[in-house]
Image 1 (spheres, rainbow, N blue to C red):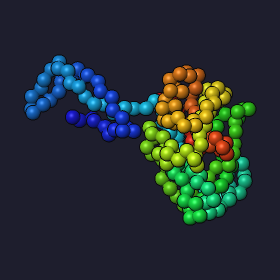
Image 2: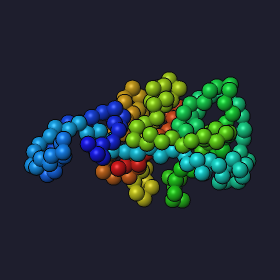
Image 3: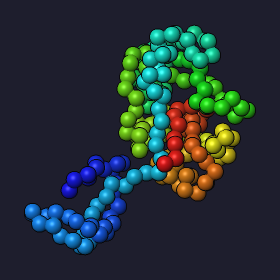
Image 4: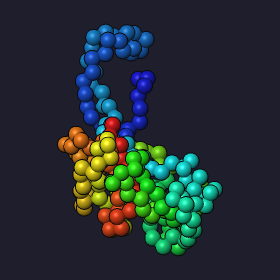
Length: 199
């Protein structure tokens, strides 16, 4: 069947679809029902730091606040805010700089330190699934969710704890209409990890 896409996050939902035209073995059958397993689409999209922005930081050697970028061998797991993968401690070289993930200059604009790989890496691309390395490692990545309205006001906070972070994000967007997007932060260090947009 043409137009069939790959499974997103490995979940399927079964629906009955009435097809006005469905070509089978050279024939066209009309007005028949077919039970089709459709890929389940989460109601959110993960937004990592862009590769283009990271390239600008590497080339300029300064962050958006004019601070010099610091280079160091990874002493912790990060993650890299571009790839959203953990650093290999004692091996990977990383850059530390100040970053604000906000667009509006108001009281809720909260800059802070983040890390990226020193070398160029691809941005996280499986955006309808939460980064698996971060999700699986609750010991090194305790998470919190911070919800913001369209006018960038903080309207929600939640510690993820032992909950499934993908399910919690989905439920949060379903239950709280005022939330336009979420920020995922390290609940221990309080530093920004990534943005989650509502779909």
